[in-house]
Image (cartoon, helix red, strand yellow):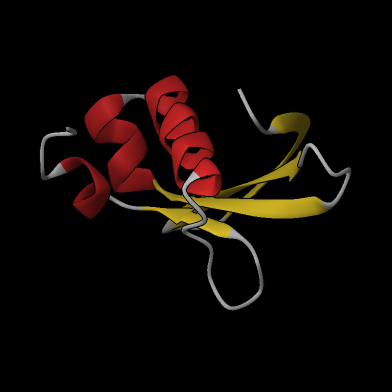
Length: 76
């Protein structure tokens, strides 16, 4: 995986946030909805976050967000 997950996890009612380091040694937050984790499993959701990071799909703060919408269309 392109991101290294530190093991630090915070969650609330809607989301689970994972701390990760990038290949450039920056720290980012990977924000995954509980619905996405329930739908595809935590490991696959984390892999999707890595794919989104590699594709440059970051929010305005440079973090990655994964929701069920990310799994609604087949990957090419």
